[in-house]
Structures are given as structure tokens and as C-alpha cells.
Length: 197
Image 1: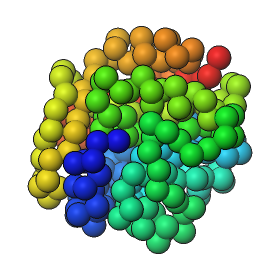
Image 2 (image 1 turned 30 degrees about the vertical axis):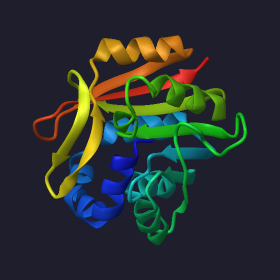
Image 3 (image 1 turned 180 degrees about the vertical axis):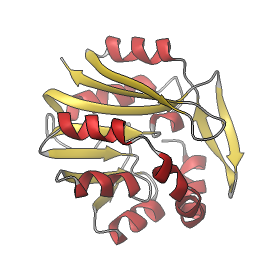
Image 4 (image 1 turned 120 degrees about the horizontal axis):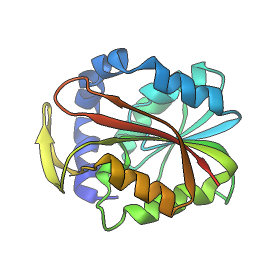
């Protein structure tokens, strides 16, 4: 994962955690509900950040393992009682087919488009056959470094159109079974749930 982005999260983890409280209060329960309903057993939260979504999944009865490239984020996630480790989503430190589901909400947006195919391959690799993949990305065009709100250091963002993500999922043999959008402020979030074929 991009080192500048990791550095930004290490420095601003607490600010990010505080800034995103209202995000999860606004977040559509339908998307979580559908993912939870389709998932069971062991779930990998890729790019788990401070662990807010991981905690929702855990409280729903799933066995959650959180992974983030930022040590500061992992520390916050562990403090919430989640099993959390530092790792790179381009080289997941897990055996093949070791998870029943993968949750990757706004984590692939921090991967360049030239490397995102590797992220899909790794997610597919660690998923069991028929496993569920929850994915959230930001709608838009292009990619590059941005700073935002209280995270004043630059972070890498890649933006996507719906059709672009649909093609990526198809290319990696995922069947889309649910789609919805979420617009809490100015940016539109594209939310997909798919199944590994």
C-alpha cells in the first residue's frame, strides 16, 4: 500500500476516528444487513481503520479479523476489542480460502489503479468458494494525492464509476448480488456485495 497514505493515517489516526463518527451513524443499515445476512463464520475486514465497521460485524455475531497497513489504526481497532493485525492488502498474510467473507469498505480507494488488480486477486485468494465480498468505493474520475478535513497529510485516492467496478468484479469471477449507493455529504459511495464463483 502507498507509504504516504500509511504515514498520514499513522499521524492522524485519532483525528480520522473522530471525524468519521457521524459517517457510521448515517451509514445505511441495509448494506450491513445484507452483508451480514449473506455472511457467516470468519470475516476479514481489509483496511479496517479504527475498527468501527469491524465492531458492527462482530456485534452481529461474526468472527472478525481486522487488517490495516497503519499501526496506529490497528492500535485503535485492538482497543475496541477486535483481533487486529498490521498487513498489506496487496499481500494478505493468510492461507488460501481461509475466510467465509471479506469486507473492504473504502480501502481499495487507497490503492492505485495500476495495483488494484492485485488487491482483487488477494481477496479472491483468501475467500472460500462461494464466499461473500463487501466492497465500497468512491464514485468519481481519476486518482492522485489529496488531503481532507483534519487528515492534512496527503493520502492516495482512486475514484471509480459503477461500470468500472462491475467489470473488475467480473474479471475476477465475482457475481454481484447487491448494489446500492450512499451519499452522506458531497461524495457518492458505490456499495457492492458479490459472491466468489
